[in-house]
Length: 200
Image 1: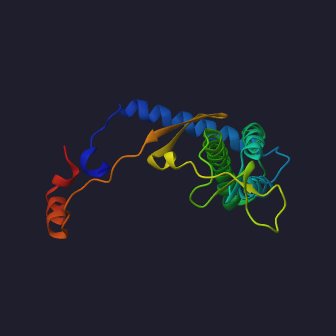
Image 2 (image 1 turned 45 degrees about the vertical axis):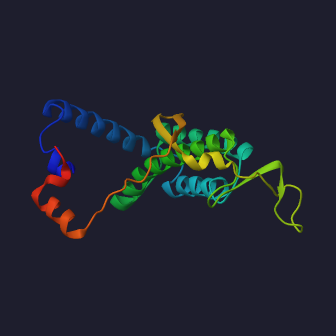
Image 3 (image 1 turned 45 degrees about the horizontal axis):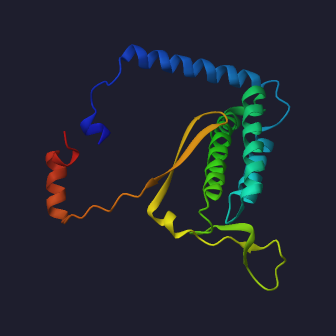
């Protein structure tokens, strides 16, 4: 759709060029900080992966997620301020990837925290632990209690907007119905070839 419907400029080429130069300068400044960093990119990656595995997997706790979100943003701010060491072009690519992954994991964890805080309970592939929940199994301790699902959230979708470091906003929105349409291959293919499928 982008190629067919938005072929022209929606902003001035000068504004796009200025934004690209700003982003490039900021990235080069961050890479320069990496030269004096005390932690390797591998250590930073391992830290965020451990956090995501421990707190963002199939067993979740609102209390634990609150602490994990704070730790995730602290790591991101440290990584932005100090960088991380690397060797060669492949290492540089991984160091840059760390910035994206670290930011993303903080936003995802915060969205999970918000969902549990909202009272969504256990749903899909995630168990929400709760002190007053139902016991998971007779052989597990008292810490293993599951909050029941709040079925009202089946008609809602969680939308999260990341606005910057430590600043993501989540909100529930009504789900949209699946469009009802008869989409036969031949008619859709004809609309695709004519460009009609892209709209105006």
